[in-house]
Length: 488
Length: 87
Image (cartoon, rainbow over all chains, first blue to last red; front, side, top):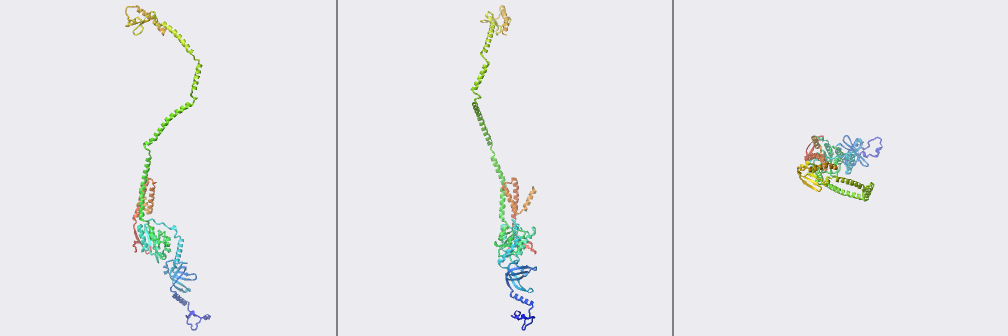
């Protein structure tokens, strides 16, 4: 190819450039060569796919994205205009291995070339996971996933906010399960859950629920479910994006995350207060089973009814137990009666015992009462008696004295016996009543008289005329006072 | 006395279902323990009945109501409209 590229070596020798014969190629200006280069590069590399590691990623104020792609030996600058950069499903950053598609172009002003990136993708799942891990580590370092940030879910939410696609199985599953367990007031915030802009929509919905005033026109949920069905890691990528993660972490309402299937884990799951393996499981976490609660309530009410009667029945039992322990009337008397019997027996036995003991003691004590003692006392008394010198002579003397006096008196008596004169012929005149008649007047007054002789009595009748008997009798009367003196 | 009763009733109204349920359960346990004096147990029973009614009302009031957020131009929720699947 003729032209500046085929100059011979001799051209180097000249001091001043001059046209050589046959040389129809004038020198090219820089702009010309740059333009040539540009055309060549852009024609030749109108569409390339480059795989390399991002470095020097910089987002300009204009929104354009500048970066370099490199491997271990070479590097190439790259630019992604704002329109495309805004649609990137991930945040490009240094170290990320990407596959960039676009065209090469040159930048004449700086003698450089670069790739204008139309599309940029993460280079394979490994790189994607590496990015995910990096983001996770960064957000975790901020404490967004900390366990102590987790809030308890309300036991029975009044309003449940659901952030998900309004179509498809996910919302249907959630609504059905909620209806089965506990029919609830559900607010669905429809969002795209996949593809361009989905992360922003999800984040805006989560923030939107949090921004609702408690008494506003739209009821504020007390629980938010962020849900999406299963899919590839790319499908779920929106839920790994920082904007979603931050919205969930900053939510003022407790959030259940239910993204993908059980094996899929997104950063949204880490940030949420609870992670549900599936949307259905999220509905189960959200509300208890109404029938269970009704049963529990019924059971509590029944237990309460039983319990309220318990103190009464318990009191009755206690009362009855005490009543049973009350002794019967006769039983009250049994013990005292028995005691009385016992005491009586002891009294009886005690007396007998006492007597026996006294007897024993009496017999056991020879010193106190014995024949010897009695004999001793008798002896002593005898001694004292002997000492007193009492003899029969004391009595016989007096008897003899008495007898002498008696004899003397008897002699005297015989001398003065009124009947003694009878033997000598005197008579006693006696009235019927036995009284002695001493004078005639008395005798004359008597109806009958008796005359006592020494050998017996003769009854006589007083007759008037005879004087002698009366005289005799009167003489006798004169003797009587002498007799009285004798006996007086 | 009446004032205190009204106060208690207001307490219960402000309770969440779970709080009321826990309070009811606590009362049932107390009653079941048999350690509450008889007179006091009647007061407890009445309060338990209030709590049970409150819980029952909360359960009875539960009904499905599904709405969709209608967002305003600023992206904030402006209103709701009935939600229909697939809509």
